[in-house]
Image 1: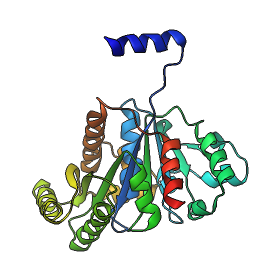
Image 2 (image 1 turned 180 degrees about the horizontal axis):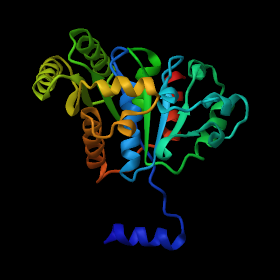
Image 3 (image 1 turned 45 degrees about the vertical axis):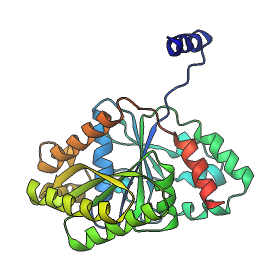
Length: 285
Protein backbone atom coordinates (compact mmCIF):
# COMPACT_ATOMS: atom_id res chain seq x y z
CA UNK A 1 0.00 0.00 0.00
CA UNK A 2 2.84 2.37 0.85
CA UNK A 3 4.52 1.68 -2.49
CA UNK A 4 1.24 2.26 -4.30
CA UNK A 5 0.67 5.53 -2.46
CA UNK A 6 4.19 6.67 -3.29
CA UNK A 7 3.65 5.89 -6.99
CA UNK A 8 0.38 7.81 -6.98
CA UNK A 9 2.09 10.82 -5.42
CA UNK A 10 4.75 10.75 -8.13
CA UNK A 11 2.10 10.55 -10.84
CA UNK A 12 0.21 13.43 -9.32
CA UNK A 13 3.37 15.51 -9.24
CA UNK A 14 4.27 14.52 -12.80
CA UNK A 15 7.69 13.28 -11.76
CA UNK A 16 7.39 9.53 -12.31
CA UNK A 17 10.75 8.32 -13.59
CA UNK A 18 10.95 6.54 -16.92
CA UNK A 19 12.45 3.05 -16.83
CA UNK A 20 16.09 3.07 -17.92
CA UNK A 21 17.19 0.73 -20.70
CA UNK A 22 18.63 -2.66 -19.84
CA UNK A 23 22.30 -2.80 -20.85
CA UNK A 24 23.40 -6.19 -22.18
CA UNK A 25 27.04 -6.77 -23.14
CA UNK A 26 27.58 -9.44 -25.81
CA UNK A 27 31.17 -10.64 -25.98
CA UNK A 28 33.41 -13.57 -26.90
CA UNK A 29 36.80 -15.03 -26.13
CA UNK A 30 37.88 -14.97 -29.78
CA UNK A 31 36.79 -13.50 -33.09
CA UNK A 32 34.91 -15.34 -35.81
CA UNK A 33 32.34 -17.02 -33.56
CA UNK A 34 29.34 -15.01 -34.82
CA UNK A 35 29.09 -12.38 -32.09
CA UNK A 36 28.10 -9.40 -34.25
CA UNK A 37 25.65 -11.53 -36.22
CA UNK A 38 24.04 -12.54 -32.95
CA UNK A 39 23.79 -8.91 -31.79
CA UNK A 40 22.23 -7.58 -35.00
CA UNK A 41 19.71 -10.39 -35.43
CA UNK A 42 18.84 -10.46 -31.73
CA UNK A 43 18.21 -6.70 -31.80
CA UNK A 44 15.80 -7.08 -34.72
CA UNK A 45 13.94 -9.93 -32.98
CA UNK A 46 13.56 -7.92 -29.77
CA UNK A 47 12.36 -4.92 -31.80
CA UNK A 48 9.79 -7.08 -33.61
CA UNK A 49 8.57 -8.30 -30.23
CA UNK A 50 7.61 -4.77 -29.28
CA UNK A 51 10.82 -3.65 -27.58
CA UNK A 52 12.81 -0.54 -28.53
CA UNK A 53 16.41 -1.53 -29.14
CA UNK A 54 19.73 0.18 -29.80
CA UNK A 55 23.04 -1.44 -30.69
CA UNK A 56 26.21 0.13 -29.36
CA UNK A 57 29.06 -1.14 -31.53
CA UNK A 58 31.92 -1.06 -29.04
CA UNK A 59 34.28 -3.24 -31.08
CA UNK A 60 37.21 -0.80 -31.32
CA UNK A 61 38.53 -0.53 -34.85
CA UNK A 62 36.75 -3.70 -36.03
CA UNK A 63 33.09 -2.79 -35.69
CA UNK A 64 30.96 -4.13 -38.53
CA UNK A 65 27.41 -4.02 -37.20
CA UNK A 66 26.57 -1.28 -39.70
CA UNK A 67 27.69 -3.54 -42.59
CA UNK A 68 25.59 -6.43 -41.28
CA UNK A 69 22.61 -4.06 -41.03
CA UNK A 70 23.21 -2.72 -44.55
CA UNK A 71 23.62 0.90 -43.44
CA UNK A 72 26.46 3.43 -43.47
CA UNK A 73 27.62 4.85 -40.15
CA UNK A 74 29.43 8.14 -40.81
CA UNK A 75 29.96 9.23 -37.21
CA UNK A 76 30.74 7.64 -33.87
CA UNK A 77 30.25 8.39 -30.22
CA UNK A 78 33.33 10.62 -30.01
CA UNK A 79 31.91 13.05 -32.57
CA UNK A 80 29.53 13.98 -29.75
CA UNK A 81 32.39 14.75 -27.37
CA UNK A 82 34.97 16.25 -29.69
CA UNK A 83 32.87 17.78 -32.49
CA UNK A 84 29.82 18.95 -30.55
CA UNK A 85 27.32 16.79 -32.41
CA UNK A 86 24.00 15.78 -30.90
CA UNK A 87 23.87 12.14 -29.83
CA UNK A 88 20.72 11.72 -31.91
CA UNK A 89 22.58 12.94 -35.01
CA UNK A 90 25.18 10.22 -34.50
CA UNK A 91 22.67 7.42 -33.97
CA UNK A 92 21.56 5.72 -37.20
CA UNK A 93 18.16 4.15 -37.78
CA UNK A 94 18.32 0.59 -39.09
CA UNK A 95 15.89 -2.16 -40.03
CA UNK A 96 12.55 -2.20 -38.20
CA UNK A 97 13.59 0.83 -36.16
CA UNK A 98 16.66 -0.71 -34.50
CA UNK A 99 19.08 2.10 -33.68
CA UNK A 100 22.86 1.92 -34.08
CA UNK A 101 25.50 3.95 -32.24
CA UNK A 102 29.07 3.37 -33.38
CA UNK A 103 31.83 3.51 -30.78
CA UNK A 104 34.69 3.76 -33.25
CA UNK A 105 38.41 3.90 -32.58
CA UNK A 106 37.80 6.85 -30.29
CA UNK A 107 36.94 4.44 -27.47
CA UNK A 108 40.68 4.01 -27.06
CA UNK A 109 40.77 7.61 -25.83
CA UNK A 110 38.25 7.26 -23.00
CA UNK A 111 40.93 7.48 -20.31
CA UNK A 112 42.38 10.64 -21.91
CA UNK A 113 39.18 12.66 -21.51
CA UNK A 114 39.34 15.36 -18.89
CA UNK A 115 36.60 15.84 -16.31
CA UNK A 116 34.77 18.58 -18.26
CA UNK A 117 34.55 16.44 -21.42
CA UNK A 118 33.30 13.48 -19.41
CA UNK A 119 30.57 15.55 -17.77
CA UNK A 120 29.61 17.03 -21.16
CA UNK A 121 29.33 13.57 -22.68
CA UNK A 122 27.31 12.17 -19.78
CA UNK A 123 24.84 15.03 -20.13
CA UNK A 124 24.50 14.31 -23.84
CA UNK A 125 23.70 10.67 -23.03
CA UNK A 126 20.56 11.84 -21.24
CA UNK A 127 19.08 12.40 -24.72
CA UNK A 128 18.90 8.60 -25.16
CA UNK A 129 15.62 7.93 -23.42
CA UNK A 130 13.48 6.03 -25.89
CA UNK A 131 14.94 2.50 -25.79
CA UNK A 132 14.27 -0.60 -23.67
CA UNK A 133 17.44 -2.53 -24.44
CA UNK A 134 20.94 -1.49 -25.45
CA UNK A 135 23.05 -4.36 -26.80
CA UNK A 136 26.76 -3.60 -26.51
CA UNK A 137 28.81 -5.48 -29.08
CA UNK A 138 32.35 -5.57 -27.68
CA UNK A 139 35.58 -6.59 -29.30
CA UNK A 140 36.68 -10.21 -28.98
CA UNK A 141 39.23 -11.37 -26.46
CA UNK A 142 40.41 -10.08 -23.11
CA UNK A 143 41.45 -6.45 -22.82
CA UNK A 144 40.73 -3.51 -20.60
CA UNK A 145 37.90 -2.04 -22.67
CA UNK A 146 36.07 -5.38 -23.02
CA UNK A 147 36.31 -6.04 -19.28
CA UNK A 148 35.13 -2.48 -18.56
CA UNK A 149 31.96 -2.95 -20.63
CA UNK A 150 31.31 -6.30 -18.96
CA UNK A 151 31.71 -4.73 -15.52
CA UNK A 152 29.47 -1.77 -16.36
CA UNK A 153 26.58 -3.64 -18.03
CA UNK A 154 23.48 -5.06 -16.36
CA UNK A 155 23.90 -8.46 -18.00
CA UNK A 156 26.59 -10.30 -19.96
CA UNK A 157 26.21 -12.84 -22.76
CA UNK A 158 29.29 -14.82 -23.85
CA UNK A 159 29.14 -16.59 -27.21
CA UNK A 160 31.22 -19.62 -28.14
CA UNK A 161 31.17 -22.52 -30.60
CA UNK A 162 31.81 -26.23 -29.95
CA UNK A 163 35.34 -25.89 -31.37
CA UNK A 164 37.96 -26.58 -28.66
CA UNK A 165 39.88 -23.34 -29.36
CA UNK A 166 36.69 -21.29 -29.09
CA UNK A 167 35.73 -22.97 -25.82
CA UNK A 168 39.22 -22.45 -24.41
CA UNK A 169 39.17 -18.75 -25.27
CA UNK A 170 35.65 -18.34 -23.87
CA UNK A 171 36.77 -20.04 -20.65
CA UNK A 172 39.73 -17.66 -20.39
CA UNK A 173 37.34 -14.72 -20.71
CA UNK A 174 35.03 -16.08 -18.01
CA UNK A 175 38.10 -16.75 -15.85
CA UNK A 176 39.04 -13.05 -16.14
CA UNK A 177 35.46 -12.06 -15.26
CA UNK A 178 35.70 -14.27 -12.17
CA UNK A 179 39.21 -13.13 -11.21
CA UNK A 180 38.26 -9.44 -11.22
CA UNK A 181 34.81 -10.12 -9.66
CA UNK A 182 33.09 -8.35 -12.57
CA UNK A 183 29.95 -10.48 -12.63
CA UNK A 184 28.53 -13.26 -10.47
CA UNK A 185 26.36 -14.64 -13.28
CA UNK A 186 26.69 -14.76 -17.06
CA UNK A 187 24.72 -16.33 -19.92
CA UNK A 188 26.22 -18.52 -22.62
CA UNK A 189 25.19 -18.92 -26.27
CA UNK A 190 26.63 -21.89 -28.15
CA UNK A 191 26.71 -21.06 -31.85
CA UNK A 192 27.12 -23.30 -34.92
CA UNK A 193 25.98 -26.54 -33.32
CA UNK A 194 25.21 -29.50 -35.57
CA UNK A 195 22.29 -30.56 -33.38
CA UNK A 196 20.81 -30.03 -29.93
CA UNK A 197 22.82 -32.87 -28.43
CA UNK A 198 26.14 -31.28 -29.47
CA UNK A 199 25.02 -27.93 -28.09
CA UNK A 200 23.99 -29.32 -24.71
CA UNK A 201 27.16 -31.42 -24.50
CA UNK A 202 29.27 -28.32 -25.19
CA UNK A 203 27.45 -26.31 -22.54
CA UNK A 204 27.61 -29.05 -19.90
CA UNK A 205 31.34 -29.48 -20.46
CA UNK A 206 31.86 -25.72 -20.22
CA UNK A 207 29.65 -25.34 -17.15
CA UNK A 208 31.43 -28.22 -15.42
CA UNK A 209 34.81 -26.49 -15.79
CA UNK A 210 33.44 -23.11 -14.72
CA UNK A 211 31.62 -24.52 -11.69
CA UNK A 212 34.70 -26.45 -10.59
CA UNK A 213 37.30 -23.72 -10.87
CA UNK A 214 35.60 -20.30 -11.05
CA UNK A 215 33.28 -18.20 -8.90
CA UNK A 216 30.68 -17.50 -11.58
CA UNK A 217 27.23 -18.97 -12.20
CA UNK A 218 26.60 -19.71 -15.86
CA UNK A 219 23.30 -20.29 -17.66
CA UNK A 220 22.58 -21.53 -21.16
CA UNK A 221 20.47 -18.87 -22.84
CA UNK A 222 20.35 -20.58 -26.23
CA UNK A 223 21.83 -22.75 -28.98
CA UNK A 224 22.16 -21.64 -32.60
CA UNK A 225 22.33 -24.31 -35.29
CA UNK A 226 24.93 -24.31 -38.04
CA UNK A 227 23.02 -22.80 -40.96
CA UNK A 228 24.26 -21.91 -44.44
CA UNK A 229 21.57 -19.22 -44.61
CA UNK A 230 23.67 -17.22 -42.13
CA UNK A 231 26.61 -17.11 -44.57
CA UNK A 232 24.29 -16.21 -47.42
CA UNK A 233 22.76 -13.34 -45.43
CA UNK A 234 26.19 -11.86 -44.62
CA UNK A 235 27.04 -11.81 -48.32
CA UNK A 236 23.69 -10.18 -49.06
CA UNK A 237 24.18 -7.62 -46.23
CA UNK A 238 20.79 -8.53 -44.88
CA UNK A 239 20.26 -10.02 -41.38
CA UNK A 240 19.15 -13.64 -41.64
CA UNK A 241 16.07 -13.09 -39.45
CA UNK A 242 14.92 -10.71 -42.21
CA UNK A 243 16.04 -12.59 -45.32
CA UNK A 244 15.39 -16.09 -44.02
CA UNK A 245 12.96 -15.76 -41.10
CA UNK A 246 12.15 -19.48 -40.96
CA UNK A 247 15.67 -20.90 -41.12
CA UNK A 248 17.13 -22.80 -38.15
CA UNK A 249 19.29 -19.88 -36.98
CA UNK A 250 16.35 -17.43 -37.08
CA UNK A 251 14.18 -19.72 -34.98
CA UNK A 252 17.02 -20.07 -32.46
CA UNK A 253 17.57 -16.30 -32.22
CA UNK A 254 13.84 -15.73 -31.66
CA UNK A 255 13.99 -18.22 -28.78
CA UNK A 256 16.89 -16.30 -27.20
CA UNK A 257 15.01 -13.00 -27.60
CA UNK A 258 11.94 -14.45 -25.86
CA UNK A 259 14.14 -15.74 -23.05
CA UNK A 260 15.73 -12.30 -22.56
CA UNK A 261 12.33 -10.65 -22.36
CA UNK A 262 11.14 -13.36 -19.96
CA UNK A 263 14.20 -12.96 -17.75
CA UNK A 264 13.67 -9.20 -17.44
CA UNK A 265 9.86 -9.13 -17.28
CA UNK A 266 9.80 -8.61 -13.52
CA UNK A 267 12.85 -6.36 -13.50
CA UNK A 268 12.95 -4.45 -16.77
CA UNK A 269 14.69 -1.35 -15.48
CA UNK A 270 18.40 -1.23 -16.19
CA UNK A 271 21.25 1.09 -15.38
CA UNK A 272 20.88 3.21 -18.52
CA UNK A 273 23.62 4.37 -20.89
CA UNK A 274 24.67 7.30 -18.70
CA UNK A 275 25.27 5.13 -15.63
CA UNK A 276 27.22 2.61 -17.71
CA UNK A 277 29.60 5.29 -18.95
CA UNK A 278 29.93 6.71 -15.45
CA UNK A 279 31.18 3.28 -14.36
CA UNK A 280 33.51 3.07 -17.37
CA UNK A 281 34.97 6.50 -16.63
CA UNK A 282 35.57 5.40 -13.04
CA UNK A 283 37.29 2.22 -14.23
CA UNK A 284 39.60 4.21 -16.51
CA UNK A 285 40.30 6.94 -13.93
